[in-house]
Image (cartoon, rainbow, N blue to C red; front, top):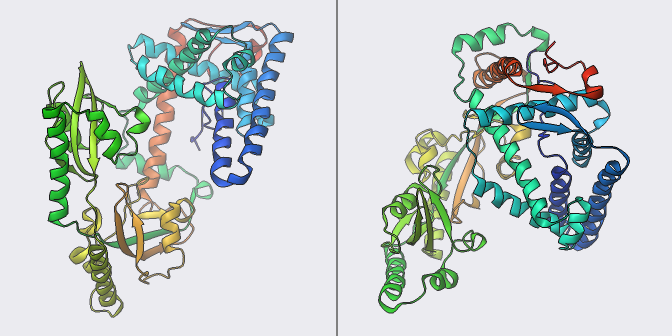
Length: 491
């Protein structure tokens, strides 16, 4: 089959030499702290030692071997050490590098630089501010591995000062973003027709057709406790009092946010969000109110799915708006929760007794508008169909249905949605498809995605062949003997 990756048969991102060594170790430390709290200090120390050992091995390499330029691709170069650092990065991620040829790895680095070079030629833009923000975050993660010592980190990374360290990280991150955007730009408008999907499927030999694991269709009926109008008005009045205190008495809006706001993410961003008219962020209602304000103005209270807000527009910088807000969430009473459970319990009794089907009950009684009209049927966000592959199912959903027989109605489950609100639901497995060979009709959407992936690969291959001929490329030393899949030597 043509479903392959050019030069390498795996899709790990090679674009940040050495940085991934550090990043992966940071991820491991975080996992240790979350899962086994009593051993987190030992884990962190152990990983810190591993971190230093890995990077010291890179510095040892530098000391014994001249780090020459092995390739020039347009405006970019590949150093000899880049290949060795990438091997270290892969090992840190647990990849078995024994089967990865040096020439294959070098070829992948050439591809990345080719993408980045032509992204610049095509005037593809990346945000320097976002890149520097990402660099700041990365450095903070790195410092955790060396007990906060910048001096030690610079020594490990073989840099004279923090500024040169930051600039190198900036260039690496910028090159990566340019390459990623270039690849996305090449394939972003590609589509496949039903005829192309059929042709793709028919040309796969029968004994090579993919197999799909056991899949389930799941439906649910949701009951959400209702917030009383009195509680809503109470919250609105409180927000109005905050607004009046700031505007009439000169009180600090920030102090209202710090003392009373219920947005957990606001503190992490310094009690300020930056909204961009060209890059939608936050829910629609929030953006509309924010972009309608004048600099320094405070909005009237308004409602979103998260609760009630007032927004303070701090500054307008072209298309960017710096805002802060106070979020208050109306409280759901115990009586309202009890009413929702009782309502759902009666619906369940009707289904179990055969008085109504699960699908009709969902259309009649479910509070979840996204699934109500489909008889409560859940849509898989990855495939956009109703099927959930058992081995890839969300762990929370799997826990809720794992013991259900087909057609059985679950007991009432309690969960919190993404806004933090409590809701109650019952679930049913409405269909089960056992492990099977790909079937064109049944698995059309999955086969369509495979066909689209093949088309993307062919498009990128064609683009690469053309751009290699149009780009200044020079490969030096032992790598000229590599049997590249791409025409990097322009023979």
